[in-house]
Image (cartoon, rainbow, N blue to C red; front, side):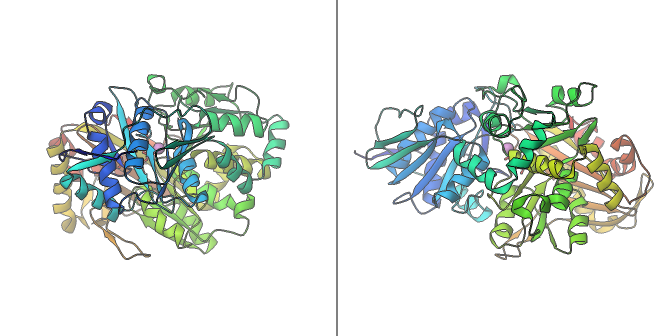
Length: 543
Ligand code: VG1
Ligand code: CO
């Protein structure tokens, strides 16, 4: 089969953010936009010759078309084999697992994660490397450089490949293996958790609702929770992946998963509620009448992980992203293991996991995972919760309350200000940076500033430095405010303000976290001059 070199010119703004390249779907559909980015990635990894890759996505609009383009370009670039999920479906953690299982050289994951899907919504491409994890910063920088100098891309002229049936097909010299997207992921979960104990839990009448939000986890959750673990039919809702996610935001938080939240706060609540996002790497956990914040969930999972077979020997260490609350640090301290603070984005956990320094990682944005893959993993977190519940034989609420009694409570909330004018968002961040050196000792909203800095990360494994990862302001009395700009938005700038307030064991108890966070919030508004710079202090989304 002849390889075609099709001429192209650089396209502006192909800069991978926190989690790959994310743009409006129509932008990805423009001639050569996707092709340029894929070719730039091949160029940045030293070409495709002789390589084996994994390809799949979350099923959103343009998923199948993008996969066809990538398959033909992979053949054009000399790739020897691509393993692709049937129907083009692979959750992000399942793709990470397939890379590792097959010792592949990497993989393309098509997803804009929790962003809405459809022709007028968002699309995205992530490249993961040999270890199964998101491309590290050095590689994304190389990809970006390559998008600026590209002159052409390689492909083969061929008709579309049938992805509906599992099996092997040839595309010129390249082999394409279409696999069941769930099978090997499920097999991995069976090695990590006590399926017999969880099966017994369900057989004993334990009830659950899992909201797949019309996104990729539907088939995974149905196979694992209902078919393998015996949860009653109907436990998984919105289980069919749709191209537009039923017009919703497949974002598992109390705002976008409101029907699940309402159920869990009602008299009809099952024992546990859970949800996952577009590409299956995030999770939300809700007990009957109690929402578990992702930061608390990370800490609770870490404190109880030894109850599941895979972690019975204990944890090597715990890592959290900088804006995540300090709850997991307290667990690490008690366990006498290392704790690490990394910039936002799963790519920063890869080195720590590869080096065996940590076993469990998490982010405040509903991401938790372990060394079983190199991505956060929504269903994994749900299964670990189920395993813990099966062993402890207590309710979610009891486990959470017990955790707070032991460690104290980290009240936590994130405010998102979306579609802020980019210059205003930059002005706010610049203003904060300029004030850092004089902030300590000042009092705002009755709180005295103890520390103020901009987070910079020195990777303890490879020595790389990542600067400008967010402004942190610590207050006397255990409060903290963090400001950073999102790397996954597709319109204007998204400013994130993260608030936390520690209240020690036996400390004051607030039913509404926002009450506990009031002073930190007001101090953050005042210090950043938010009203003056961006013209508002009311966020679009509070989680
Ligand atoms: C957001 C979250 C971050 C997460 C990233 C990708 O990034 O804050 O914690 O790793 O999304 O998640 P940002 O830069 O917008 O704050 V996902 O589920 O898109 O892979
Ligand atoms: Co995601």
